[in-house]
Each structure stands twice: as structure tokens, then as C-alpha cells.
Amino acid sequence: MGTRTDAALATLVLAAVGIAFVLADASLSPLAVALGGLGTIVFELVAARAYETVRDYWERPLVEGLSLVAALIVVAVGATAAPEVVLSLFCGGAVTYLTFLALVETGIVPPPETWW
Image (tube, rainbow, N blue to C red; front, side, top):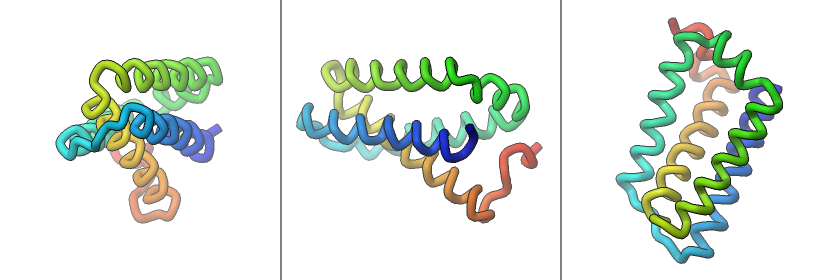
């Protein structure tokens, strides 16, 4: 588990979002993309406050699996209900998260456990 698993899960969600964009013939909403990215940053800041606890829960295979399934369900429902907004939010969140992981892996950004 760890960064590679997190990146793989985020990539799966991003791939599903890309497929849903094509199937729904939706366009990106720049505002929703930005809000999705901002949501990811805020979540990481809050989660870093209790890094060990969050990591202990997140690294449980059941939690990761159910989170992935829930994300894919929201993407599927969102693609039919409000594709531009929902898919753009997920796109912004996933791209921001993958960028965040890359920045931490390369040492450009310190790991979250050191933030507080």
C-alpha cells in the first residue's frame, strides 16, 4: 500500500472520468475543475492534521476498495445527472491528487506527516 496504490486508484478514477466525459459528450467546466482541485488540497491539509489515523484507516483494503467503488458509482450517476459539473470536479480532484503525489515523491513538497 502507499503512494503507488494511491496513484493507481486515482488513475483508475481519472480513466473512468475520461471515459464518462466521452460517453456523456460533456465539456470541462473550468470552475468545477478548480473546485475539485481545491477540495483535494483542503482535504490533504485537514487529513495531515491526523496523518497516522487517516493513513491507518485508508490503508485497509476494504476502505480502499469501497472508496473506489463509491467514486465510480458517483462518476456513473454524475455522468447522467450533471456530467459537466460532476465529471469536472472529479477530474480536477484526481489530477490535483496525482500532481500532489508526484510532488511529494520527488521531494518538491514535504510529506504530509511533516506538515503540522
